[in-house]
Amino acid sequence: MTSKELSFGIVRAVLTLAAILLSLFFLYKIATVIVYCIVAIVFSLLLYPLVLFLRRKLKFGNTLAVVTALLLFVLLISGIVLLFVPLIVSQGENLSLLDINSLENNYNNLLTNATEYLNSHNIDLQQFTANSNLTSFSNFEFIPNFLNNLVSTIGNIGMGLASVLFISFFILKERTSFSLAFKKLLPENQKEKVLNSVEKINEMLSKYFLGLLLQLFIILILYFIVFLIFGVENALIIALLCAIFNIVPYVGPIIATFVAGILIMTSSIGTGADFSTETLPTTIYVLIGMFIVQLIDNNVSSPMIFSKSTNSHPLEIFLVILIAGILFGITGMIIAVPFYTSLKVIGKEFLPDNRIIKALTKNL
Image (cartoon, rainbow, N blue to C red; front, side):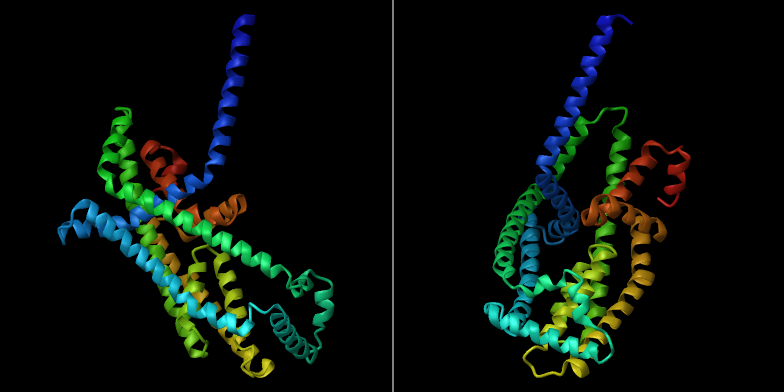
């Protein structure tokens, strides 16, 4: 190899590396747009059966069917949001969120009741909080900043929802055009494999997200029954909120349990209910009920639903979610199963003779 060829190779390697780094940096900068597109594709998969129904059964035009499907989705989301208004108003009245002094007094009252109860059982709560960072929560000066951040977050969610709906509209409306353009871009020798992979991924992801909705509905019903049994106020709304948290595998139920416990305890403030004989026992019973619901979900409903929708073993799903959570956090846990399922489909189509892929995709 001559010095000229060596220099050329080094320059080409450096330029290739620079191009890769610039591409990764560009993808990082537009990560939000990529997320919007991914969410829009998911919505499109969920709404497409409805669009087909409107077109075939009700004889709607393509554009009218897409607009109607999106409007129904917006109405559904609006209805869910409006369901939380009574809960927010109720908790706002109980906690007097607009009166910082009153909120601090209520917090101290709740803390005093908890401390007295634990002291009667030889548990020193004050010593525990003194050695931890929990005392920082007694400073309520963070609330204005929290409210500002909340307003900003709601604004970002509104912007994201509008973007997702806009992208979803064109994905659904121009589905055929996009499909034809995509086919033209494919190399002839790989076209059949790619199209088979896309069709199979579309089918399996549709089944997965429908299965996810079914799982959330089952959890909603079971939570609602538990809350009704123990007389929890706003039972349906809190059950819906806790069910939504279950979108995040494994971590979501823990958050849901914590949120439910806080809402139940704070709802008793100002009602005259005794903390040790009424509030605390009710909260414990509800949390036990939620734990039983999670046992049912983890061992019965989830394995049955997701094993059938993804054709994967429950242990396989658990390991994939765990690894994705370690590497990419909560976002990774949410997208782990659909991403892994897509990889399995692609692997089976392009590398059918590989022993590892053959073992992982034997049920596909």
